[in-house]
Structure formats: structure tokens, C-alpha cells
Image (cartoon, rainbow, N blue to C red; front, side, top):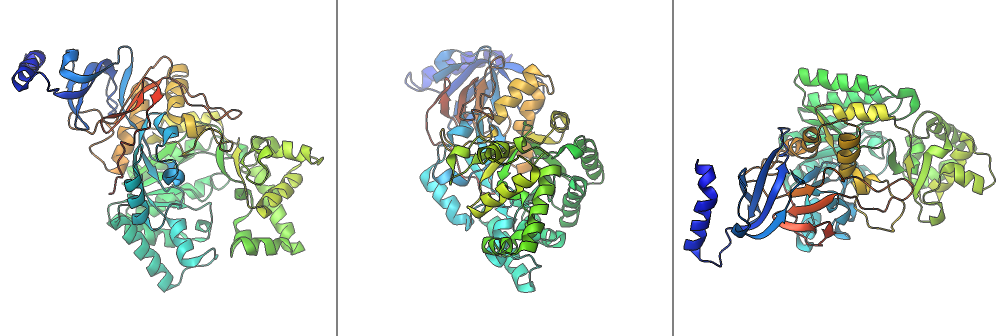
Length: 524
């Protein structure tokens, strides 16, 4: 009864306070709330004041109670999406974060895969001073720490070096990092032992952080790599995320059944393991991932010197050929699509097969190896690898501990040939995997984008729609929401994301980007 009388009492309060006083700054009216907890949707109005959700009313409120009213009839009102794996490297150059905001993302966690800025406090201070379009948080990257202390050397750290790395992780956590990330497939992380990672992760754990890992291998050695990450979680007593979890290469397709069973077993044993995933059948990373890690021991100069040694060069070629056949090469040069090639932009969007044909070369794995070496000599390139199976994608997505995360880099139209996940991850899940394929219910999908990653981060005031929460919200049309970015034409914003509110301020206004910088720098 009291709830039914609330609009009348509210209007009386307005009259007492004066006609020019708006109790709510913003009212999102007549929508269907999917609150991020996984609970069933319900019809409600959502009212915002001072950057917070102050009322959720299942009774329709009068438009006059708010300074601004958004009609959400026929639309979904959800918490702003939380991207737990974002490459925020260009943040200081692209502080508006338009490519993320237009997907409905209001919070993103940077420095995944062992990378990230250093020193951390200076970076966060700069972002804060500049103003940012989304809420940003960051991890501390193991690769960044190791390279700062040890360079690109393939060896164990000395006691002194280990202490320096421990101190750097401890300092980063004190400066606001939310945990530690590793990129054990990348350099110099590939040179680290499990013991080293455990020692540094323990520092993050003691500060209340979590551990997120690009696994040491995602192809033939995937099972061993998942086991290693679970073991790191157990020994360091730290919550774990198997980040952008996937199964690389046809010989391993279907192995997600085993990796997900390993996650379930670990959780049953008391190890806090979760996953995140992007909804595509292609990966994206540097072309040098096809080159065996040992070839870069000592850095790029050492790599170039090894190429001048015929015996070592033959071994490098053999390693690349193996990876083209068995790993990210997919045993077909057509599956490796060049994405960013600063020294030869006309290759962007083309495949290794296309490049071989352009050169008049037979498109074999051996030819591909020679082209990869040329790319390495010329400063590298990035590439899209079409080597995942849709069955694994859907199976991983349905696991109750899987969160949706883009692995996307902030971008803007016209720059390179990016993976479409940079523009379309969250709308793609809602359009393709919820509406079209029924892999997830809408409530499940929103939970995986909001409440679940908020729980992993350890933030209680974002990720759900509830009174008192920060007003990070997205209003989308469940009948039209979809990604438009493709592997052929990636620079396209999604459809159906109609309103995005960041800390109570409108960042997307009726599908138009406003460019406000209402985000906050979130320090743990």
C-alpha cells in the first residue's frame, strides 16, 4: 500500500520543496529491468539522482517527478556491462572510450595478459586528470614487472630480482591494482616458472587481489596449462580467472568438455576458479606468437642474430611450421588474417595465403613460416587467427562461471583492421547467442556481463540494478540489438544500444554518442 502511495507522497513533497525542485535528475520509465543478478525480469521505472539509483518502482511514476525522462517502453534496462578483459592501452589517447561505450560497457578492467602501464600510480593519475568515458580499473602485469627487472632473459630470477618483482607487485596493489595478470604464452612471461608466478601472485593475494591468466598454451598443451593455472590459484590462495578461455586448433576442438570439468573439480575442492570469454571463433594477437619463444631469449636483437645462424634459423622455421599446422595457423594460411601492419598497410585484412600469392609463392606452411619471419624482421604485425570451434564457444559460454569479456582494444574507425570483438562483443551475445540461437537466456547473459564480473572484481556498488547502486545503466532493444562489425569490415558500431548512462550521466543518447567523460578511475 505504501509503495502505491509513493508517487502521490512524492508529488506532495515536491510541492512543499518548491516547484523548481526536481527530486530525480533522470527517470527511465516503462522498461523491463534485467537486474544483473540472474533473477527474472520485471517491469519497473528506475530513478537516478546524484549518480546513484535512488528508486526502482514497479508502479509507473509521473514524468513530472524528474528533470529528464527516458521512455524505455519495449526496451530492456540492464546494469552497464563490465568488461573484465580490456586492452586500455590507448586510454590516454582515446579517453572517451567510444568503441566500448557504444557496446553498453560502463566499466572495464585493463592490463590483461601480463601487460599494462608502469608506474601504475602515474598512469592512473593521468587518466583521472584527463577524464574518462567509462569507469576504469587495472591489474598489474607480470610481463611488465619481469621485463622491468630482468629484460627478455630466459632464466630464473636471482633472489634480489625476485624481491624487486615482489616489491613492484606489492606497490602496484597499494596504488590501486585489483590483482595480477599473466601472459604465459607471451614474452617474457613464457620464460617464468610456475614457482615464480606463485610467489608474485601471493603478493597480490595478500592485498585482496585476484589472478587472471592468458594460459601458457591454448592448443595442444591446453589441459596442462589449465592445470597449471588452477595450481597457481591453490598454492597462492588467490581467486583465478582463465581469461578469454578457448580451445585453439582443430586437433584440440572439443577439449572444453575436459577444461570445464577441471574448473568444476577445482571449485568443488575449494579453489575459486572462474572464466571469461569473447563470442567469436577467431583469436587476435601478434604474428610473432607463431615463432617459438626461445628464439626471442635476449630480445629482438638476439632473435635477428639467430636468424643469421643457418642451424638456428632452420629450427626457428621448423617451430613456426609446427605452429602453423597444429596451433594458431589452423593448418591453412587462409586462417591467418593480418590486422595491423604498419610497414605495409595494404596487407591489412589480407591473409598469409593472400600475401604468398602476391609474392608468387606457393602457399604452404613453409612459405608461411618465411613470411612470418619477414614480419618479425620488419617490426612485427598483429593478426586474426580463425582457429576456434563454435561448439567450444557455446559450451564455454554456457558454463555458470563464465563471464563475457571483449579482449578488445580501445579503437576508432579507420585504424588498422581490428578483430570485430573490439566493437561488438556484448551486443553479439545479446543478439546472436540470446535472441537468435537461444544459447543463453537474456537473464543469464546480462548476469555474465554485469553481476558476475562485479563479484569477481569485488565491487558491491556496481553490476546490478538496486537502490543505492551507482547509476551505470544500459537501455537496449532486445529485438534489434546486434553487432555489425565483421572480419571483413570491422569498423562498425553495433545496433540496438540506445541509451548508456555512466555514473548517472548520459553517454549514449538515443543511439547517439555524447562524448561526455563521466567515468571514474577505480582504485582497489
